[in-house]
Image (tube, rainbow, N blue to C red):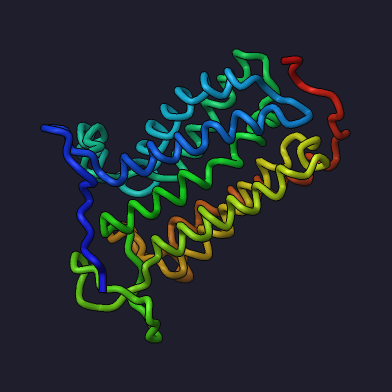
Amino acid sequence: MFPGLDPVAFHLGPLVVRWYALAYITAFLIALPIARKLVQLGPKVATRLAVDDFLVYAVLGVLVGGRLGYVLFYRPLFFLAHPLQIFATWRGGMSFHGGAAGVIIALAWFTWRRRLNFLAFADRIVVVVPIGLGLGRCANFINGELWGRPVVHAVPWAMIFPAVGPEPRHPSELYEALTEGLLLFIIMLMAVGRPVLRARAGFLSGLFLFGYAFARAFCELFRQPDDNIGFLAGGTTMGQLLCVPMAIAGIALMVYAFRRPARERDWVTS
């Protein structure tokens, strides 16, 4: 049974603080000190201050890219007819794939301006991304959104989401929190701890792209697709379709990283 948790975490006078916002604030607070340490691991790719400065770019990339991704990938006809609704972000509607594209653009701009190695800097940043993914999916669960498909065979953890009907469903948000969040974070931490992989600029970024794509495509087997899109050819979903180029890019990056000479000296001197 769905516990029916309140999407509002608490009130500060007239200010309403929701779990979704709290999840991402917490994610940034956890991820920032970790990222500061990661960029200083040999070979060093940036200063700790550079990570602080990039935070603003990252937030803008997530918000703008995530919203535009949802508009273009999931409801283009609706927003074409109601363009002002693009700015109604309080009504929901964000896309991870769009957010990822936004962050990549922000990374490219930031590293170009700071004369940093794009792939090397990205390698350290992507390690902490699963923290935000996992906490964000937990917030989705609390909000009772992005629910799973009805269970075919009874499982003890199936839940009823009142907003969508009386059928017991998979808590797919929690599946994603465990795979895209916790599991992927553990894998990335293990990988970044190996000097031989840190020396191959692009490998960790490729590993993240492939790991996320694999986890998301798997969890889509249990997640109910958006009503306005439904299932695509062969029973696939839009989420799975968008994971295909991500997985291909991830594999290509890992291969590219190991075909280039390993970097033994630091990219930055401080």
